[in-house]
Length: 113
Length: 113
Image (tube, rainbow over the protein chains, first blue to last red):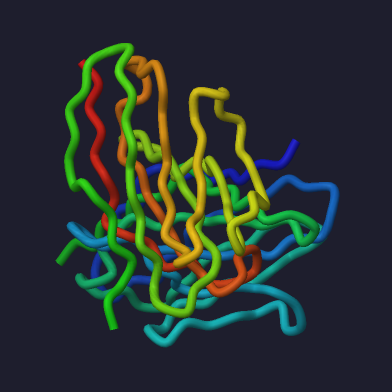
């Protein structure tokens, strides 16, 4: 069955420290992968996506994620976090033959001053 | 340009009643998707419509139905409301769905008493 797993429900990290938010997916076919972010009191917005090509994708605010097909993972990383990165992060996948978007349960990132 | 709009913002209903939620996509977007988000969980896919045709359906009972109009706006209907239907209902629009970035509305908070 198709699913997205985010093992860490909450991740506290000190400002300027690195962070990794883990995402694993389960699917028997090719997938597109996404990270969405929800800042406090705001709606969901796309952070970055992997469709094909280079397995390393980057966002404009310093996040990056790497698609690893053998490990069925799409972990999100940032080398140095800021207070403004405090938010809920959702990993999502779409199987290439369908239009059903499957979201993970989310990881709450709290950046500590 | 206006983003995705949803109405109403909040809604309180009693068990057994019926509810209609409305969504207006971003101008130029032809695909609308509906999600249910329960507190502490990721959005759960309900429906996706493209050019007024249903392109995807999640694991929700037949009490949930939707449609898309010629102007690409959409309605989500839920019949015979249950307490468990209490959630934030999100609408997202995109150009064609699937691999496209989805733009989310602020949601409708439904409370079933």
